Image 1 (cartoon, rainbow, N blue to C red):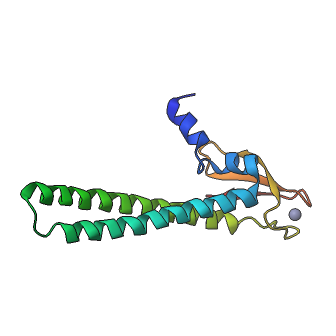
Image 2 (spheres, rainbow, N blue to C red):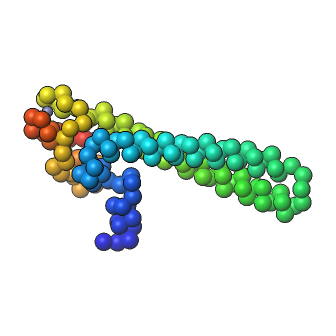
Image 3 (cartoon, protein in one colour):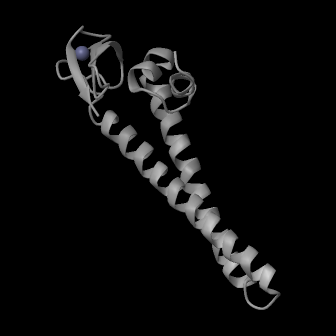
Length: 138
Ligand SMILES: [Zn+2]
């Protein structure tokens, strides 16, 4: 296993099949929403820090102005990254949640993972109540 595979498998937002196998759909969904909203809060805080850096850049020596410009760039990058991450995690969680109802008996979120395709974009799941099989697409 390569180092990046290990990090990816251990991260809170790894592959869908691994996450659901480990903690079940409901906990996976809850954790995805919490993680995505933590990124949204980070994004808002970054914007506040960016505006504060703008405000601080008035006056001061050239070195201080350069440091403030660097803070503006760093906080803007953090804000951009965290907003992208929020949108990705939130949209993925909602996309999976919209496919979490059994097509046969209507049971919501009670299924187990039985397999996934090669690029992990499709996860085959089976209803715990009626054994109906369906595919969740990312
Ligand atoms: Zn069912």
